[in-house]
Length: 361
Ligand code: PHE
Image 1 (tube, protein in one colour):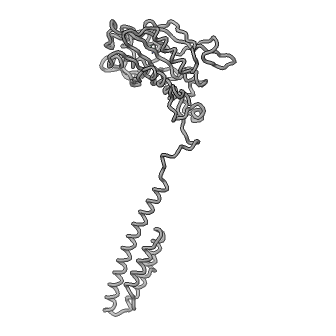
Image 2 (cartoon, protein in one colour):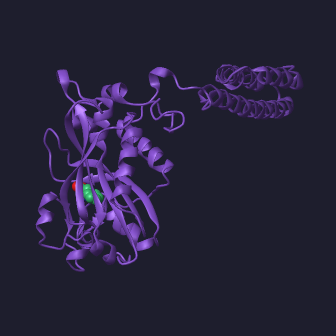
């Protein structure tokens, strides 16, 4: 046999290096090293040679085999890298591309309404305060002048979480209103105070007009001279800005809250003519919030001197004012997590409400 080992190695190696993909490379591997491959066929012929020639040719063939195997591995590594690169390039996502309209998410009306509330009160100089959904009994009730056994506790259908091993005040509840954020703020901030606190609230109540979880926004203003007239003006300005109606009619009805004195509930003027609700017209009224001058005992319990400071607080239902402004008829649909509902009543997520460009997109 006269094999030119070098020529064979060169030929096979050249083909391997030219292999365009992993499949072609594997075909070359089989053609060279497989049972019926070129090198295998040459090996089979070694038996016909005499001992001396067989030894030399065998060594030469083994060297070819070695070279070819190494060439295949090198090429495989290159092709695998290229395949990975190609896959990464094909699957890459350009996050700077605009969203396809049919895929664009919508902002829930509660989020939109909160953003609008924050924009309006922000313009008036209010900061946003927050408190936890799981609140202790003391801040939800006692510090708001609702001691244990007080009948006002029955007005709140409270979800109780734990008894509180450290005494009744340490029991935890799902906060029944955002008013505990008043306590948290007064305990930590030296007046003047001007905050709103939007957030989730919970009551064990579920029917056409109540859901066990709902949202409120609390307002608190404390300084040395703030009086009921300021409360009225503040709410009047808020309602005009929010409902985008000049001089919205508001009615302050005397009411009772343990943590404010005097207290009032506020109704907004509306008409229900023809079954359609319109804000700021007609002679019907709709309750939207509770408010009053912060009770001196509430100030004192949170470390604010009632002889030096005074102020007002209010608490407003966010679902209620969202339903009124956006004509959403059923409260419970807010929490059905129905994307068709969200698609209809939701808002474009990019537009942040401001008083200058307009609250709603
Ligand atoms: N916390 C009261 C409620 O949930 C509302 C309120 C807040 C009333 C602040 C007066 C002052 O009904």
